[in-house]
Each structure stands twice: as C-alpha cells, then as structure tokens.
Image (cartoon, rainbow, N blue to C red; front, side, top):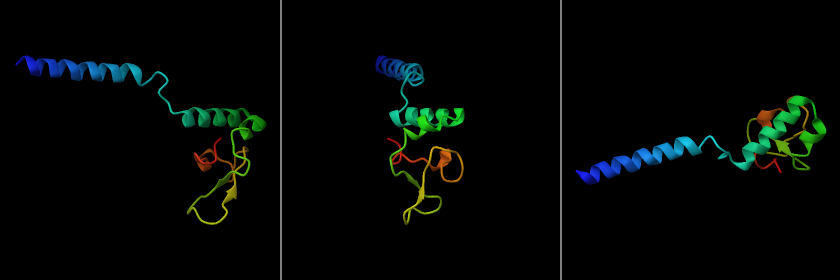
Length: 90
C-alpha cells in the first residue's frame, strides 16, 4: 500500500514540475529566432528581419525540388512567414 502512495506522489510531483517549468523559457532557440524575425517583419524593419535569413535563403511551396524561390524579409509570396524553414534561418 505504501509503494502505491509513493508512486502517486512521484507522479503528482512530476506533473507539478512540468506545469511549472514548461512556460518558463523552454522554447527552442529556433522558435525564438523565428519570433524575432516575424516581429521585425511586422514592424516593417526589413533590414533587421533580413539579418535572420541565410544569404541565399530559398523556399518551396509544393515539393522540395529545383532551386526554389528566393526567400526575402519582405512579406509576400516569396517571403511570407510560412515559407521559413529551419534551414533558412541562421
């Protein structure tokens, strides 16, 4: 009976630790970089947004085949936030 009680307390403690720790800084660095890129884009600071992109960043919309479209910091088909991949973010 005591082992079941200890197991339950450990599960509760693990759950409490996850609930408390997850919201505080557990985001992957790529997520923070992407959020900074999108914030610069939203402000219209395209020079700052371009600093987050690789020199020859590309995007693909259907299949990853061919050279792809140039990815720019300006919004639009070639530079919308959905075109960002982890390989195109520095």
